[in-house]
Image (cartoon, rainbow, N blue to C red; front, side):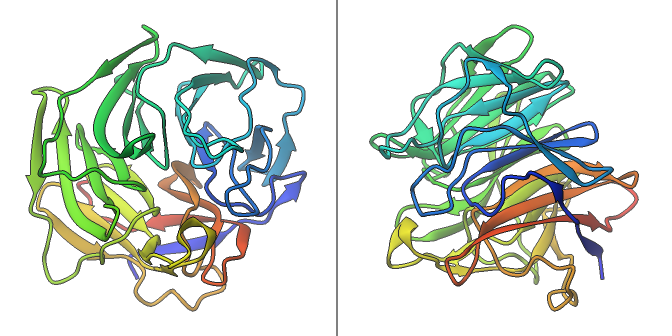
Amino acid sequence: MAGNWVKLEQKGAGPGARSSHAITVVGDTAYAFGGEFTPRVPVDNTMYALDLKTRTWSALTAATGDVPPPRVGVTMASVGPTVLVFGGRDQDHKELDELYSFDTSTHAWSLLPSGPPHRSYHSMVADAEAGRVYVFGGCGVAGRLNDLWAYDVAGRRWAELPSPGEACRPRGGPGLAVAAGKVWVVYGFGGEDELDDVHCYDPATGRWDAVDAGGDIRPSPRSVFCVAGIGKHVLVFGGEVDPSDLGHLGAGKFSAEAFALDTETGAWKRLDDDASESEHHPGPRGWCAFAAGEMDGRRGLLVYGGNSPTNDRLGDIYFFHPVLDAAT
């Protein structure tokens, strides 16, 4: 097995079961926000904190400032002690375009300058070393999107980056990761079909490239899955591989597989092919909250909740330790 899953015990007043929510990691704490328990109905607008050492939740109900209204299909990322929350869909099913920051030291919210157009079920990832976050794609007011934006945290300004062009179709629920100094767009839902293409953007040159990611082992087309950049690899777990006829109101067919893309060779590797029946394996799911993080001194993927094949929202949390080669 090329990795192991650990199911985390949870204590305290946590968010509970939900999907279409977001999570990010700052030091030894994971922060969770947004989501739904009933399809398309936002649960709350409380920021929750999970101490990854004690596995104890706290509801940060005394947060101050510009607290965001409830939303689903929202994304989060963190740079230093700051958590950034962007977009989503409100209780009237309208796409949103606000960017908020949450100071993990003071628990104060701030509304930041707007940039990308309204959207939900997009992707956002931090490049902590560069001090910026990227936002890509998602469901916009007039349809799905394939634009890429960067937000400079210190400079508090947005920049729209070059378009990937027609080769990278507009999509919802795409994977977005930073690995080997580049931004990687992986898969997503194109409106009629799940996609299985991979594209990368090089911030140094401003150039997009379509990536020939193949081999004998590769993930099937999917969207709304978990993704993280670990060294030169892009990790992928779960996701919806066959949409429901009921759309967002129903549960499609979900994957329980984990893969890693070697961004240098373009080769995929299956990571947990003999672990799917373990009690410490999340099983098939999509629409999860996820983040790259560290536990027990090792980098990996944190997965929280999501939707199940029975259309029941999940409230469990897992950490995946991948076993990758020494060049990671």
